[in-house]
Length: 458
Image (cartoon, rainbow, N blue to C red; front, top):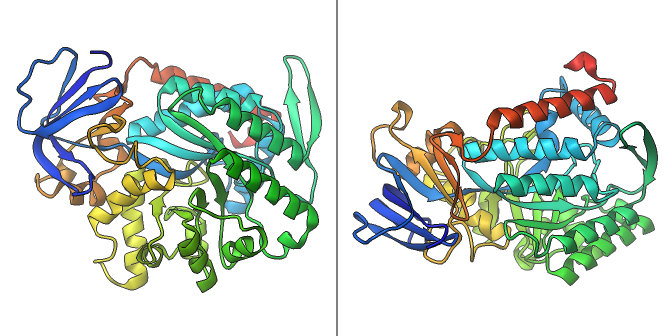
């Protein structure tokens, strides 16, 4: 057997159709997929790696359906949201090179592995509307680093907003030059990346992103043309189209003007939705990435419970990693409950199992990967997390789903497995030098801060 792994004596939270919990069981992994699982001890012969998991919960790897590449190295750089936006925009546009994006990617993947997030969907840039798609080199550096780290990722690449010039600085070994980036050029680069990575690595997918335009912006001919161009390329390739920041009528406006949405649409935040917005989501099958820790969830409310009652797929995202939140999906499950319980003044909303669904199988559905990920079932990819439950805040040992969603945090993850490959065991990465990743990221951070004229903030 190749890539053979046996996990024994774990409490297994399967998240399968019956939502079975096996109190003491085993999981067999062969060639990157789950080959068998069951209750009790494994009785057969096994030639391969074995992990003793007594006292641990085995669960599907967590799926984060909305975050950002780049933000891991802009944490703490603003005293408030607007300040952080300005600083981050300056860094992305004028101070980064492919090494920045590679070093930041490795750091981001390290955090996700340590938190038990095996799959994440990231926008390549964003925040202040600076998408690094003027050329393919930065995204290629990011993706190559992610591939080396071993996690799964969906990287969304696309144009900036129309209506103003976007000037980017490109660096060589001894000099730099400034270029004005057009949305058309960004769309062509994004298309090149989508096509290049379509079959390169089954853990990585590149998809399209598009800014959220309101009804007034969509009346502009240039904006409408760019939106149609992205829509058509996403449809032609049958890949996800990701948007960040829908609110207050924007979904209905984009549907009416563009016919933009279908089951491959993934819409982040979705706050203060109108009745028309909700009707579009229900009719088109578009998916929602709910981000209870994000600032947009402070400015308005995502009606996640109401959308789920409408039959809309609602997943969880961290909106990580800046300005003020980590990649910890356990923290987001807890916050999602408090967010909606406070709104309804009802602690019974979003019970533990529903929260865990949003962070696993519903996340897989949002990314069009439910046939492969999101639950522990024979034939699915072996993306598995072991959580150490023998800890004071997770004791006594009963109702593992409640303990995972109410009490656990990312630091409780002992082991992270992606595609049958053990990426972390005993909270230490396997085959990776964590200190080297941190040092590399810090060097890239210092170089970018100096280029941006922000040394006073380090």
